[in-house]
Image (cartoon, rainbow, N blue to C red; front, side):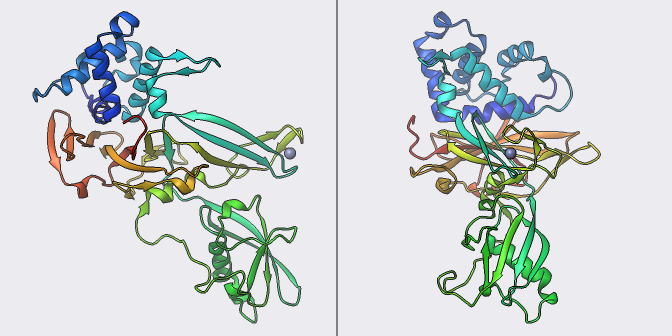
Length: 403
Ligand SMILES: [Zn+2]
């Protein structure tokens, strides 16, 4: 069947999700599936899981499931390099379709959606009339950017003598307001006499409402902010002064999550928003919020992208991802604890043209990490679980309700 490491990697990831595997093994022992559904994907998946977890450690090819998927979705057939993520999501959708039942309000639910589905809220705000438009969508995975977006601001600086100067600055979009102030001072201090310092600057919106320097730049809608020189004020700054969040050291998973959730302006990259209230295309901002997170959270690192010449490129940046206790409480609209442990990683090695997929997964029985490279399995150290090859991350909620 040629190069199918992308399928093996996805299947090894899914196979090491304890709830998912127990669910299908239980289906097998009840043998209810063949009578209740005519689902070939589910029955092939069930027999694959029974084979993998049969304690018969002979390597084998998951031929039956692969053949069924290839018949249903011929795009997964052929010698070209395929994407393990696309295959995993295709398989989850296929399993969901075969298992789904309708709720009273007409929503399709299944064990798959119970386990993997979360909700995000996307809010677009028109900068002309300030109307907001929010939509809630369900997701089975989140794609996290590895590039830190820059954001452009027009700053109206008001000196102690109430003189105005309008200046432009661009800074990391996912930073704090204090980062913007520091960037402003670093860039423009040579034009001011006397020099300005961050402790004397009060950030305000254009209606004179004061911003906290420790709040996120995402709190600023639009491009304009006013910086006012004021006498040093202990109410605004604590003893250490504003905290710089500019990154030192490797990119972390939380940096990527912050970047994903940061406010994006929709006029710069040709994304147009048609505002219904203004009845025209206007400048706008877009912000994503996480509403609910699933028990099994699939995160895709955006390693593959198209450059300006429409050439597909791979980003090899190392992303520091926690193995245990990834705490997402601050990013979700809830007070409930949101802690996750890593249970599997799909790695992409090599280039786009000649790449290879492997899987690092935690065995839920002996609690050791293993690397699956097609038919070979090697025990690995926890320290080598995350490399610059990490592409798909599978996190399981601590104390997940379904465990
Ligand atoms: Zn509008």
